[in-house]
Image (cartoon, rainbow, N blue to C red; front, side):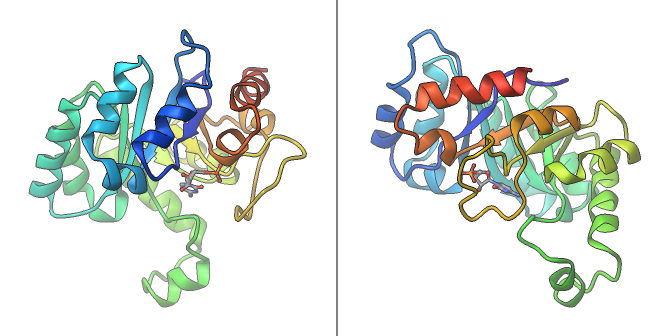
Length: 230
Ligand code: C5P
């Protein structure tokens, strides 16, 4: 199940930034990139068409969460953009996740966010009024995600074993917060190296700044690629 390429988070504000960044890679290098809210809301579907047109794969990270009918219609639109993977919030419910799958179709991967990694256990208990441990809530949402027929979840690398153990070894765990040994963590609190992420069983890793802010992004990508490949 493991994707051999690290997913590069294209956290840029404009299409021209994306163009100049991608131009720094060899033409034949087929990348897997993540397009998030900032870039998608700034540029729109054109950015997906542009990146797909270059032959790259796209994870569209929009974290949909709305009534089932609206999510289903939105997913139909994303399916037409030929995204390779996209996501929803598991908190939207099993019916919403099933509707998302229905709208997207069976081809692209569909994963869910359980609890955002920015949510602390205390916040979850006080604000969401969920009286369990954070881990229990994450596993609960992951089980509901599997029940709805989705492919996996976004999670912290530290949660992979727990989630796969509770569901199935082929349930996808996509993990951000990855840093090559010795690089700056930035605002990420709990980081893991590509090698450790591979060893604990992550299926996809997402890496942003260590590649996008590097003096030589193609070289930084290659190094991370090799550590991830093992
Ligand atoms: O630059 P960096 O490698 O920290 O980027 C990680 C990417 O993964 C960003 O786009 C960030 O929004 C995203 N992400 C994350 N942690 C999560 C979910 C998404 O870092 N729990």
